[in-house]
Length: 251
Image (cartoon, rainbow, N blue to C red; front, side, top):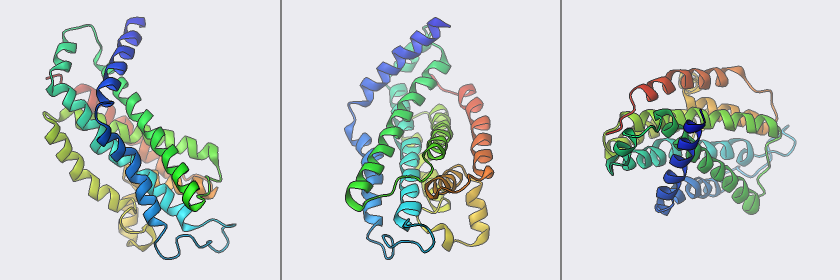
């Protein structure tokens, strides 16, 4: 057990050193959602108080959760899969496969790095929104932290699946790009959820990112967290992680 922990720690440090060399990807995953949030503030009625919401605005309870969902999507579908597969293309994973390093340890190491970037993204979104437009913090902070933790576990499980089955970084980038647009649409990032047809909203609620956005909005408004988003996220993790571990490519 100690060997597994030590090997996982070494792999985490190795992946961090490699990631530090690509500041463009890091900025895209952390900075781009902040830029989007600040642009959202210029849309009509975004910064006007919502009647009966005790001063909350659409900028707070709609656009901030969407910005965080976009951050998770970019990190899990674009940033991390490309990082992992690039390491494989350089032959590092092949060399690791000849050592006692556990496969699960490699996935855990990359999950930890993805979680770190996701935390930096939420800090950047909250800080940027607060400084420029007085973004209100979630009314239920414990609920928000719980939702965001579950959201990271869910979206990064998709990262591991994409990275595990993709032979090259281009393939991983292609799969991520194909998934990115429909997930953004179904989560309400492209068209406000309230403006979508009822059937599309129901389909969106059954997608991982749609579930994340819905739960984040509830925590921001201080509402009771619905059960369905957690069921969707839980089913996603239970289905995806075993497949990612089973079919992960070392070469």
